[in-house]
Length: 529
Image (cartoon, rainbow, N blue to C red; front, side, top):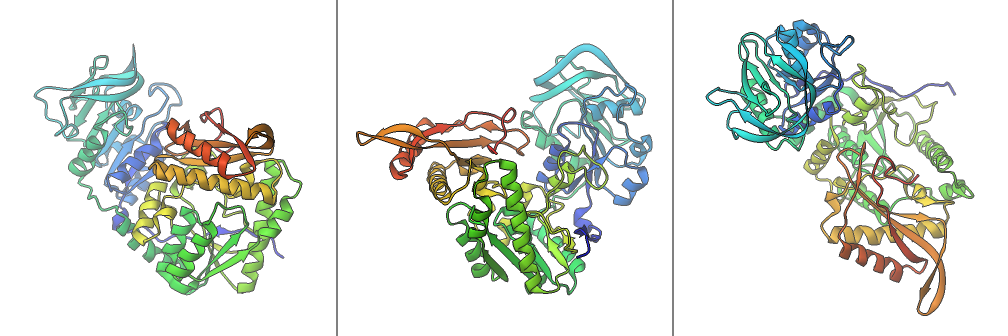
């Protein structure tokens, strides 16, 4: 067969509901968070590189521009900048931290290292008697989060100082004439309690942006875009049961109906009852054309004798490709493939315009045949994970699927440390079911980024019923996180841990010991393999 690859299709231009707020990435660690916070205010936002041209910005007709923070000094050679003409377009512009300093320097103010730094929680004081669009309705004294060594020591001519901190006389300034606004602190982080209120003041009051970025609007827009892209062609979706592929499939099905066929490859490495839930939800409730491929034996055979985690991943991915390829051939000519790419995937992969440093290459669904030439339909490409969940709720996806915790593609195979066997899979599946049941009963499931059981393929001595046992340990892993880039181990209540441990040892004959993983990321990863 001819060697080819899946390639993205051109996407129709965004409609009015997507008239954006452009967040200019100047290298700050919170750049993506700013875009998310703007969207939480129900205003569509996009992250763009600082190299963006004034013409490109005018073409997007944004409601506003936000200049992000960054680690550099604005007066240093090679520091990231924007074309100064952008600041004179008359578009409302908010500079945050480094972004504020860049505004000040480009507009005639002065930035310098004063010898006084601010890191962490800081008291912010509004200037008495000075009107402020950003601070309107906010407490005159509040806590904010600072992270800077340089400071604005002289604001641009015509700008008025509206707030200060104990160490920073110019903590915020505004210039209504040029429509530029700067804050030295970070309103986008949770440590600035009134930060969202400040962003709303800027978005609604200064920029006049309407709060129209809702799940219903996203669905309406997505359906129209998918129909324009797909036309009358047939489309295929590799359905894993995870929230991304599930929401992508439902959105495409709402747009083009039975032109979509979902293929659910059941590799036998899922958690308890998940395969049945996927089938009942899509084939039964939503009546989406679904092919259920029961390939458990094939995958078990491929994993026999394999202990290396990367080899496990390679074999599972390769077998998935083969199974998916066979089903695609049986369907005949299919031109398009649904992929659950998220906006965070686009950003972390460097984006189409090199928005961010390339953190990882975005992975296709389970890996795709090199000889399968299909166009990609990416209905979630503009959405963050939390937005995907809201769209899923709006589409009627069951709560257990909408809020399903992240689950690795290789499934339980990489939560068994050692060779994957039928016995170990069944034991781990049962252990994980106990853990999830108790986590849900305690009302903690949605507070955790991930919670799962790990089965190291080792045995230890125990005593049960006055008899010696030689059985497996189960390790409990539970973490909290915003985005999985970093994670902290969850402080589960002792009584909950006692209940889980007691049930695991008493209900599962192959288990005689329970351990708790109290490692954070970094230095550990969330998954063990």
